[in-house]
Image 1 (tube, rainbow, N blue to C red):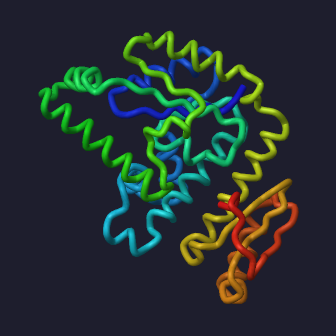
Image 2: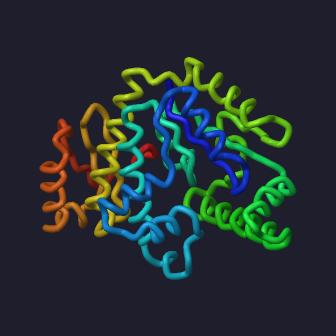
Image 3: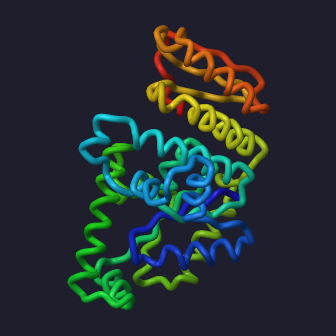
Length: 269
């Protein structure tokens, strides 16, 4: 069984599909739980985290790394939650937040705008209000993806499976996703589990560094943590203290090294 992320626009039946997929595969499911857990550990309001993972960066954020800090917190929690596998995550940007894991089945649920508007209207909104809300939400998601990841959420190449819900029933969509999840390409092998744990270690180490050293890169393989920093950063007292904290707080780290003067690898967090 694989880790499954289900991405969708608002009022696209993504929640119903995700819940039925999880029930059929008998695996855990979460969405807003991610923000709840992140908020609890890092003492950041859930509304603030939701804006960080949904809204495009504001003018102030473009000149600071506030959003990067919050996204690091979120990814640290998310990688912990999926490290054991057998997970369905339906929420914002799951396909991007877990892009470094090879066995994640990335699903996109699509629906035509008129159908989405009609579903939104069942919540008591007028047709104009429902349409405006959906278009505004779509616009924010697109801006966020482009600003943070230089990606368009409507780009099918970001997903392994795209399912249009207009002609298919929810049950049809669930069947397609479950069949795809059973393929060998998405099997959660022992090596995949190891990679998940390594990624979790890297993001949790990044949590301790990101506020003071936002451009530091980190990789982890078989518990060996490599931190890429500049000479200036690596020789500060604060940096050395944080390294000591990383060693104390992450008992699964086998070895920790700092590399200076080298380019940050593409697979670094």
